[in-house]
Length: 508
Image 1 (cartoon, rainbow, N blue to C red):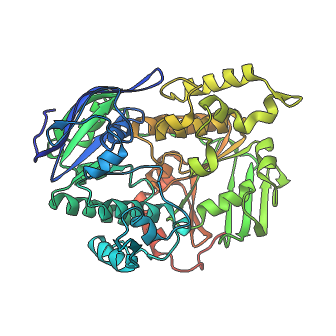
Image 2: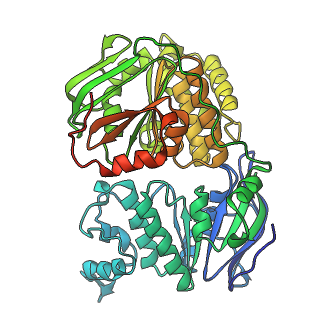
Image 3: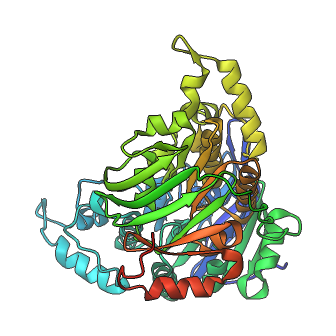
């Protein structure tokens, strides 16, 4: 791998270090970013790629080394100075004001004034800005009512409204559909052609190779290489990221368990959240997938099974008992555990330690007279952190300090500490790199081999096709078919999902 050249240097890092406590997040990193390029940062979760982007954007101050802007070293690098230098960041944790409108968020802090009075021209300015990108957002809608993908678009518009010449995008595609990803990639190219630099932090290597001009590979806080994207393959990048040849992406599917009574049975389920007619079952030791497009009702169904959403009609049976109307506490106590797709909203307390987060769902089992057995909590957290390869392996650090993939592992640890009989995994590899994905896949296979039922949702349909024993097709809040992944293809599944227009095929 050879370093590549590009346009004029806008920002240069020289021997930059960054530490979080005893953890060395960046170790002597030197690189430059240039105008007129899409520069991707790739690496395993915890490799330092997001930290690197945040140093460039002024979010983090370097503990050592220099930040050089337009050829001149800068002191006291911070977000305010970075913004004045034309640098904006779109972080994974979106920084929007929920009760303000889309337009108000986009122009917050850069409103136009006349004689000290704010001009009421947000709608016109927004229309001009949106015409450049074609997102089609409603400027008057409150941000709290937008889904995550649209909130990300608001963040992108905020950066454009500030005439940023460097835009750092940290995992911007993690919640986008394929169409929205393509739209975003085209926007990156447009910005590049205007002379901007887009720093694209991502674990989607296909997207990176499709849009980036240069790619910087990070590993263990160090820059391994900066290369011309046209000169490398996905295999090259994975090998550089891991420091070794990648094993096959998926472990072998565990043997199909012997016939037994279902652990979970759902029949003709209807809910207040749009589920209309869902039917499926899961046996001990079986991996069962729900295959559907975004908005098909998969997540809403499983929230109702767990006890979060209200059931209108139908039947849920777990462990041979009627489970309709049970609460999440009932479910956890009985060994029915949900790993939510939104780890920040529904899964983790970011300010608390990895140890405390792993122990959250199993606190009652570790408490005597209202006092938690800290020794047991530490032992369990340490064992799970080691098993799941959480990095850094310090269970006393706040979980919010960890990369997205390591936060996801902590969330899985929290579920495993509750001793599940059936585990519901909703998008378990979202925002996770290839190495961490393999760890999660191996965990899923191991759980099934131990006799635990696994119910899996993934927008990456290949994951279900490679891991599940059986899968149900879902559309418009209904199950309309059942498949055996080993006997069909992803292409056949997508054809069926995209061509279902009514519920006439619905199957019990």
